[in-house]
Image (cartoon, rainbow, N blue to C red; front, side):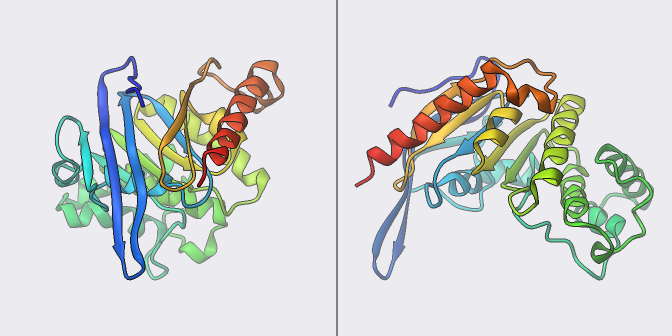
Length: 266
């Protein structure tokens, strides 16, 4: 497959990337021949069927998994070096908040580990809670917040140390449609305000189209990229844009890409 190159300065670059897990039942080929370049400030979504390697690729970027083939760089260095340099924040599918810590305490946790002063911790917590519209909730405990608010707190924790890259593994998948729509809107505002490079895993075609500057369509295992779709939507995107002809046409192309990928399944 030809290399897909973003016009912005490269932040993440995969060349011939593959990952094979060795199991008792034999090798499992999770990723194969993945070629992708993500530029600074892009919002790139990964979509495909369950088990296609979307999350695995994100975990490779975060050095939580290690490729067995090809090359992968983050900010021009290895993923392990990027992790040590705190180049990214990671938001998991579940909020993963500690119930015995307040919301502020949860957001502070990575800052405590990194050795920030208490004054700096408090200032950063105040800033990111405001950014995700959780002003006044710092003293609450996770169980006192709705699922959507917990996910916003999880995003705040990932933003606390101000990494340039934000990796998000289907963070809104378990939420109802109304809450998900609102968080999609808020995430776009947050992206516009921070200019971060975002990698976002989703199973939702409308979510991928609404959020992204590019949509990466992946095939069933072994996961590979079958299409990379450039969004022609404006950066300012009210929810109503989902009813536009342009939005529907992009969504149709994503759907066709997913169908084509299934057609190649063996």
